[in-house]
Length: 343
Length: 138
Image (cartoon, rainbow over all chains, first blue to last red; front, side, top):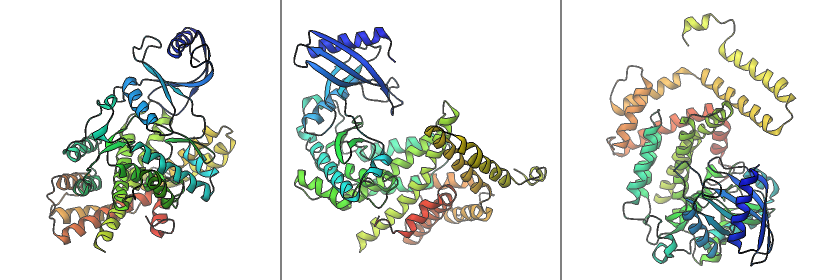
C-alpha cells in the first residue's frame, strides 16, 4: 500500500487539480500488468467544484528507465486521442514535477473490465466476437482521423514521418539483431523483404502502433477502453489493422482473424463504417508480416535479457521460443503475399 | 556432452528428463493449489519438453542445415554451424546472395527448412496447425 504521507500528498494534489474545497484519496489496490511503472487504483471523494462526488481514478507513475514517454507527452497524446472520440480512459490531470510522489504521474479515469486476451476469448461467442471486432474497427478509424498534416499543436513533439522512415526502422531492427548473440539469417532476410516492399504512406495519421488483443478492456462484449497509447506515432493507418490481424496476436483462436476476437470482415466493416473508406486488404497483409517480424524481434530480446528471478528467466526463455513461430509465419506469409501478387 | 561423459550415466539424459517430468506432473504439480503456481509448473514442464526434444533431435538435420549454407555460400565451415549461420546472416544483410531466381528459391527453401526444424522442437503443434491451414486462410 502507499505510505500515509504519500497518499495525503496525492489527495492534496487531486483536490487542487479538481478545484474542490475538500478532497480525500484512498488507495484501493496496486494494479498489475506493467513492470515498467506503477499503477494505483484510487477512490477519490471531492466536495465542491466541478468534480464534486466520488471518482475511481488510476494514478499512472512515470517509468524511470528512460525508454518510455514522459507523463506530459503522454498526457498530450491521451488528450488528443480522447478528444478525437476514441473510447479510452479519460485523462484528467498530470503532475509533472515529481514533487508529490517522487516521480511524475498521470491521473486517468478508471476503466474497469477484462483485458486478458484468453479470458476475453473464453467469454465471447462468435457473434459477440464479431460485434466487438466491428467496434474495434470503428475505434481505430476514429484514432486515424488525426492526420499528421493537421495535427494539433500539442502533438508537435511527435517525430514527423520523413522520407527516410524505412531506413530508420531498418537501422533500429538491425541494432536489435546485433544485440542478440546468435546470428539470425531468417530475420535478416525478412527485414530486407520488408524494406523492399514497404508501402508509400501518402498521408500519415496518428497510429497506435501496438494495437492487439491485450491492449483494450472489455466488459462482456462491450468495449470499455483502448489502452497503452505510449507507442502512438505518425504512420500508415493500415499498420494498426495489420498488427491486430497478425497471426501472432490471435492467441488461442487463430480462426478469428481479427485479433482472435472476431472475423476479419467484421473488423474491416467497422473501420469502413467510421472512415467511409474501404480497407486496403493487401496493405494490411503487408503489415501482418511486419507484425510477425516485430513479435519475433521482441522474443529475441526477451530471450537475451538477464532476468532478476528464476521465474522470470523461465518466462523469458519460453517467450523467446516464439521467435521460431515468427520465422515460420513470416516465411509462409511472404510466400503467399507474393503468390497473390502474381496470380 | 561427449560420448565419454554419456557413458558415465546409468540412464540416458532423455530418461532423466522424462522421469523428472513425470514426478513434476503427477506429484508436484498436482499438489499445487495456487493458479499462478500451477501455471508456473506447466511452464517448467514445457521447458523440459523442449529441452528433451533438442537433446534427442536427429543430428543429421543439423548437418543438413550446415551443408545447405555451405552450398549457398560456396564455403566450407569445417563443421562450425554457428560460424556458418553468422556468415549467412552477414551475406543476406549485405545483399551479396545472388539475386537470380534459382538462388532466391534455394535460400528461401533453406530458411524454411531451418525454421521448420526449430519449430518442430519448440512448438510442433503450431506447425501442424499452420500446415493444415484449416483454421484460417492466413
